[in-house]
Image (cartoon, rainbow, N blue to C red; front, side):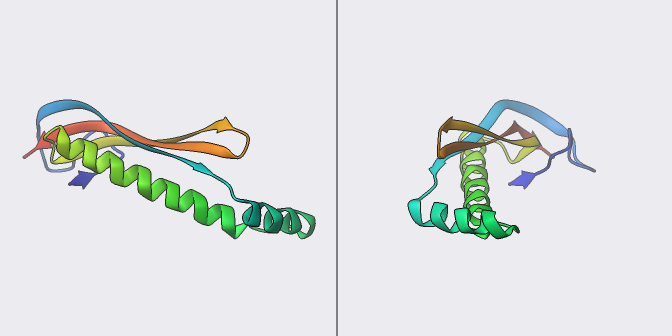
Length: 104
């Protein structure tokens, strides 16, 4: 699967547009991470526990995006974007979306 955040794939022609492909995950923080983050907040610096949680969320959303693109019959996804939103306090959604296409 070819993945790009541009409107086309260099040196390839889009021969079919399959439509919107998407993948998302909703994740919640945990008490252990919150306690450490609270302490880190006092002294400053990166909260690596949350950075790791966000990275895991992005990878899961991207995997689901690829799976959705394959189900649509695409061999590429163009214009890939990521979006986050808060669901409730302590939980957020990571969404990956793009246009599923066939390129040659």
